[in-house]
Image (cartoon, rainbow, N blue to C red):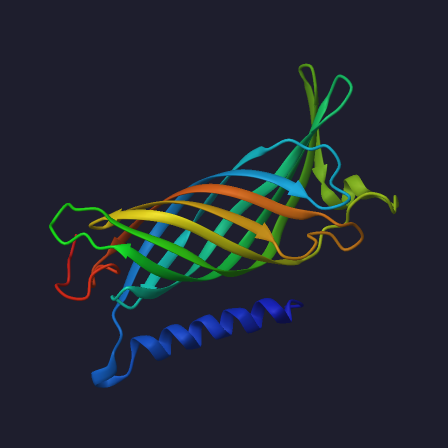
Length: 226
């Protein structure tokens, strides 16, 4: 209830989707889908220090609004980010989980004119993320322990206190055959993920999407139902 930026972003996406999908003769096609992805996540920023990538994931629902060369791709995505940090005889792993609302613009590069042909596209846009989970784990040999980020920080002012939300930018390239799309994307935190340190999330993702019904987003005619 205390995240006005997140609420305003969610309201904007809902209003935009409703306005584009209703409008009588000017109705814009809407196609719904799901996505799953594998994240290679890390942290940047002046306070990040020496960190290594952490393997995360993403899972959620997406849609395409429009069926021409340019379309809008909003979504509701759960995404796991973070980083690992090696130490002397041990390693620690930060895991940040966000509920994200991306609003991407998709631009078609080539059109799959025949059934089974590959259509390619690029996309970019902002995302608003609400932090719903944050944990730190440490491993030394066969021993491991974990705690929430707040517990790990304690009263130490030099330990990161992660913000309740983050803003990021996403850009990528993809290909689609019928109902199935595969994309590679890069996401960069546009502000610090922490309130007291300069830490920016950096995430490379391989994402698979599957859409139901409606016209293909890289086609201007001929609805295709998988």
